Length: 312
Image (cartoon, rainbow, N blue to C red; front, side, top):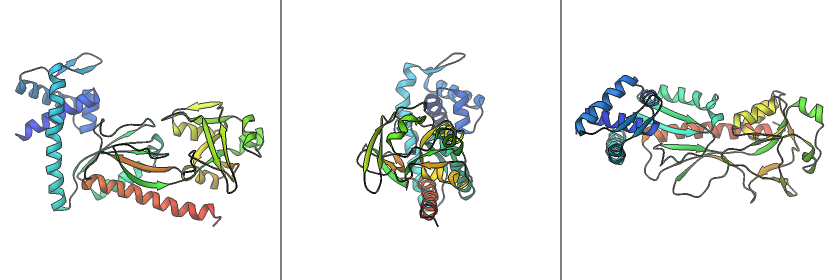
């Protein structure tokens, strides 16, 4: 198949996935007019119209719906060939497409991707930052990063780093409202709840000597982890936060631990974990190298917090 046809198929498949010529152009690093020409050339080649276009929407025609799975298969074959060649040459190139929680887009991953781009200049990166759960197989992503507790599925898990959750509030909030001296005392406080990807009705606390289940009745609910974090910093109330995110603010004096002897776990007592999931199959070099870099960041966090939490 001609290389021009593969480029046209990639343009078609990306517009179909993004439902927008502008968003697809941004993903592929091309102009919207170039993508429009590529799709038009494909339509002329196959002899049918592939998209219904209006001023504010793009949708597939029946012919487009039929062509799309074949386009994905052909592009997958191209990627497999590229990955085989990359394995021989030791070079990484192509696109890495992933999703990750929103708060990882505020500094952490952009800094890592900057380092990654220096090491692998022929790789392009397409990141989706959202707290919603995205299935990488259905969304044609290389992987999705998730926090919390890994769930069994057809996806393959790639552990990144483990962490603990505690309650945190600003010094100003605790000065105004008082410091709760027990889990039960939380009922009198303004609680901040992160609601994505799902609403947790129970907070499970564990200390060295006891386990307590507490039904959280929030004053504030946010579907953004970043918003919940910023709300705690702003003094709105008490939030359940990851230690790797909150402890630097504790060191800076902007947050304090609440009920510090208790950590929050799953109902079975497990600690949460940052992890990636991806469809079955071998990870190409460009994907595995980025995941290994992110895992290395997590290992450095673990060592730092091990010292911090021991008072070193």
